[in-house]
Length: 247
Image 1 (tube, rainbow, N blue to C red):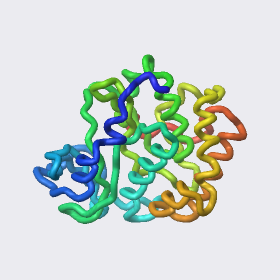
Image 2 (image 1 turned 90 degrees about the vertical axis):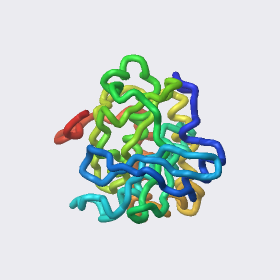
Image 3 (image 1 turned 180 degrees about the vertical axis):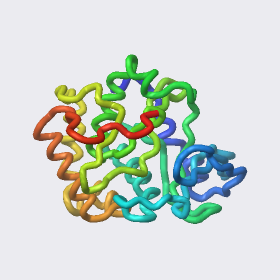
Image 4 (image 1 turned 30 degrees about the vertical axis):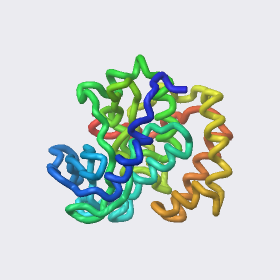
């Protein structure tokens, strides 16, 4: 159990889910930061209006080390994997059409933007351990401090998951607080429960395959096996281990 107590952004009410999946985009405005096109705004459905983040595929900047046009799919894969683990640290995310074409649509987490990993690290040890493991499992190449949010109930969330699941080692994160420490038993148990579900043909593997390349799903399984065998948090190696800028 995390130090926090809310799952509302990962498991929203059915009316909110329906709005995000099928509602009409209204009042969409460009987000001023980032190298890719990002919009904040509202989606309107029968349950009312829902504030969302929209990341269209056509606004993704080309990268040499990720297949073009796949970042929005990785956002969706991150949400589904978080849900499969039972950790629910990624806000509800779907792939759907929008004003600028297909992209990832994620429910917006109401939070204080002045709070980041760097201000939260001392009081959210368990939450951040879980996030560090999630990043190791997904091979997150871009865990900045501002990608850690605390909602109005105190629950910790991770956002911006487009640079994940590469089959080559890419782990870059600001969360190295626990390197070399033993993985807590409850988190290790969650990883063990996930293992049969990522076998070829199993439910989580099928879900991941709808967003990722076959080789990337295999690499996910390999990273899970390493974590289960070593039972420790990854240790930073040579080279670049922290994203730039870190915030």
